[in-house]
Image (cartoon, rainbow, N blue to C red; front, side, top):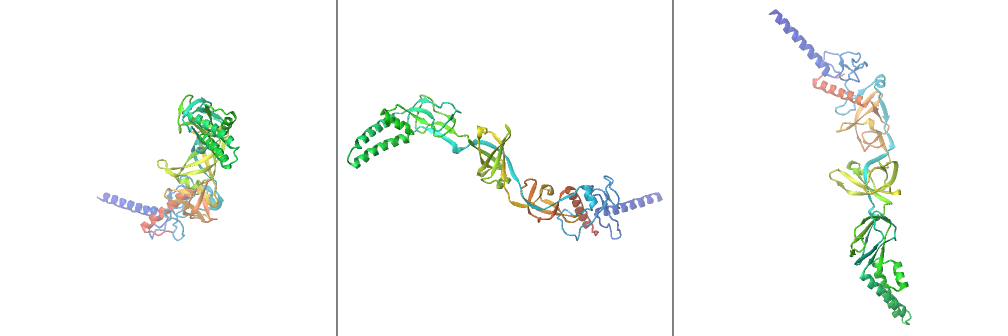
Length: 422
């Protein structure tokens, strides 16, 4: 029976000692009880290491530092504590600081674009009279034609009869020109002009009309000419012997010396892209070659599935290296004025908020929540939370953040236990 009593006493002592140690650990550098003045020491590199006396970290060998509460020192944000580091520890963990300064950021919006035909350089060739195609001069899709080149000849009874009317009007105008009455002379000129305008409205060229006047013979077939230079993209009904009617599209011509590129810009980058900005374009097929262009239009709607906005850019196309339906890499250059910036390495982004560590005094780092804009050139523009000239940590801030969270956790545990901090 006496043996059992000793066992009970030993268990009670062990429980009491364990409870005291737990209170010391949970106190986060505070006193475990009013009568207990023991201090806690931890490793800056390994916050999980906690000792009741000074010494060295068993993991990395660094000197342990005293765990201190931060009440009354000011600064900080919820979930973080203020961190103090002496010069030697600062050197060992590689803390680097940078001043908050003003500079112009080099922002670039990078995306992928699709080369398309410039719609303002597309021409459709139609006939305005009914007739039959006799001769086709431009008969190959993909062939280049110049403005004024003959495309085809067409026989049309309407054209033949109008030519005859024009010759009659021409002879009448010559006879009436000798009349002593001005009104008679003007009527002859008006009839000739009206008949000639009808031929012109049917796209009969001035050279064909002059030839008609000089020869005095009606031409069976008249020629249609290319209204502009370009490549034949489509040739639907331009076949010899085919009957054509007004409105029927015979050719589609496209000038490819300048092209459009439609680039998808992500929704969050859309406010950066403006009409008139310069852009560069590269192709996988032409490494090292950069085409220069500019933004000419931004479409007003967002694509619902990809959440992107389409920007249209124009590029000169020397040598026709840019071919429709090619994919290209696009880089839009966004000019900016000078603004308050910090290095991107200084910002710790938890997804819920962005935090930096400000060195308010030498060796004393205070966490602060900031609001930043879109990153550019390795920097974030500061929208709020920092002032010009303040010093922030730009290297080893993850280690400082770990220590800061540890300090906050220790303080919270101390407050729950009701133990005062140092």
